[in-house]
Amino acid sequence: MSSTSLPSGVRLRPLATADAGALAEAYRANRTHLAPWEPHRDEVFFTAAGQADRISASLAAAAAGTEVPRVLASADGIVGILNLTGIVRGPFLSAHVGYWVDAGLQGRGVCSAALTAAMDHARDHLGLHRLQASVLPHNAGSRAVLTRAGFTVIGTAPSYLRIAGTWQDHLLYQRILDDPDL
Image 1 (spheres, helix red, strand yellow):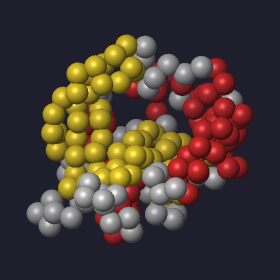
Image 2 (cartoon, helix red, strand yellow):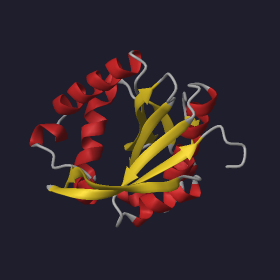
Image 3 (tube, one colour):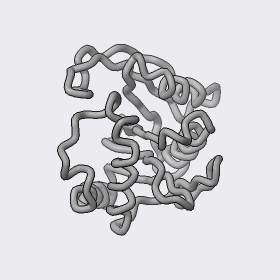
């Protein structure tokens, strides 16, 4: 998944060390938008130094083959992320997918196109069998993105993640990548 053009002039491209400032700015600009869907973040998270630390860890995981970190970028800067994490080889051949897009770009097909590119890369270049995602039951937008991409609900995980300061249930989704009927 090198650089892929998406709707609204957005590109999906690899995360780079130089992205720390722009990523911190994107998180600050979307702080209120993302707050209901993410863990509480300390103030350092919203700084270039905080993002530099996160980027360093992500790039190390990428070098180890357990993560594929990507950013959604436009002429205005970084407008979101899409990551494959927790890549497992052996008989499982699976990864977790997570994403977000700038509040002003929601509903324009950006996440759907990015997710399609990620699924193709996971299947064709990483040789993965499945992708999984977890989503809050009341996150209708993310649920719609997953459904359009052919993900199906496989269960509910009670008190799965501490989001917005509260342990919350999540719906678990999966997409079998090498199933010709999907």
